[in-house]
Length: 427
Ligand SMILES: [Mn+2]
Image 1 (cartoon, helix red, strand yellow):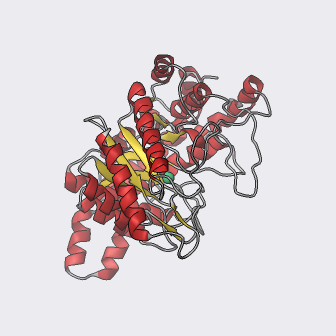
Image 2 (spheres, rainbow, N blue to C red; image 1 turned 135 degrees about the horizontal axis):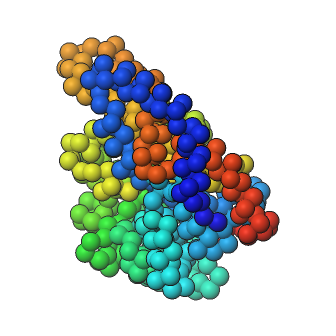
Image 3 (cartoon, rainbow, N blue to C red; image 1 turned 60 degrees about the vertical axis):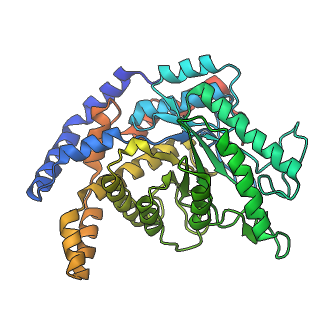
């Protein structure tokens, strides 16, 4: 299924006058504070969030999975689904593939399909956290950190193969999340595990094309519950610093211990120029992978305050970082969920762009704690949705993406095309 531009335009026509009144009202309000609404709209228009191929099917938990209907059965159908999202919000212009779940038969038809939907290929992700059917050696006790050099070699070769698949499609980065670690005290020698991992990563690093990056993701626990080799941003940064300038730290919101100050981590990584980008999601307890902004929108806003500040300080455009959603769960239509996530990201960014940096810095220098807090909260408490809608509208997207998705009966169409009992590959 494809959503045509006239369908979006028609739906927008019916919503335009209400939207326009709200936008003009907000534009005037912001104008009184010296903020140019149109500049913010422009920044939002340029902001693209990658969609991971594994979020297009219904996710599960370790207790089970309740299939949705009409889920993509192939890489082609996954790309079509991201095409639907991008048509609706014009902010989901790339897809992040997972190897071996998404190995293209032939690269060119896949590239052509993506191009026809105005999509690019984001970072490619390797997978050594599970064994594949035809795999010789097991990753049960680790991959890049394994005590057996033969297992490490197999894991390194897999990552190099992932780079090759990515190169064929025009990706520019390899994303590595390592599940290696230990479940019980005594099981692993921390130092040897680190050193083995470093050696493995160095071999992968050496295979990177000149214009590629490798993103090193960390996670405090799970699936290993006593230790993980790359447990936190400090370990990840240490690996990146030892590897070289093509390695940067990838922050996944759900990969921290409870109550970690993620915005401060972001500020520090950006200060060092080592932030690769983000895997957005939300959580209440652990790595819950819930819809972005569903639980802690203020935290998301505070993170964006640091991101906006850090990008400005480094004079780097938003599209030089990797922004991706990494969420999945059991109870929503995955496409509706992703639309909500992207909207939450754009809202947080718009709010962060409202912050009066000069006044904030002045308040900090005068130790005016109350004013500093107020500056942030004023921005957070502004309803910026008209700015987000305007950005999407100007880019050709829908003023009400989920409304139009439902109005067009997209899921039902997908059910008719693909059937009821489809399971997205890889899940
Ligand atoms: Mn992630």
